[in-house]
Length: 134
Image (tube, rainbow, N blue to C red; front, side, top):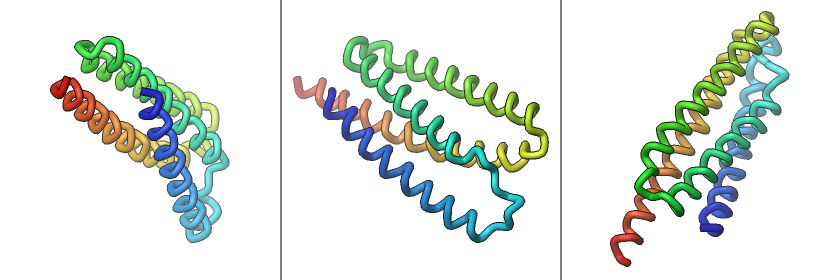
């Protein structure tokens, strides 16, 4: 299980660096008023939450594999609600930056959630195939 977490962490770091490089290129191509100063913080937030959710799901799959689907749905809902609260609070506090922030937030949410779901599906299929062999 530890190897799965370290493999996921390595892939997540690579994925995050690729997103950061793409973002830097895009920021140089777009006019200055599209830039939101929250980008580095958002990268840390999405990276951390994605790793935390994956960690929880790996532990659930290890200890309670029959409850994996329920935990997956619960963590997805909690994560979505958490992200929604952060987005709304920031947008209300910083109305000048709200549009740029929300667009970037949505793009990062979709990117990191897609990565997480692909990784979790791969993990569950791998777990299922290894349990069938046993």
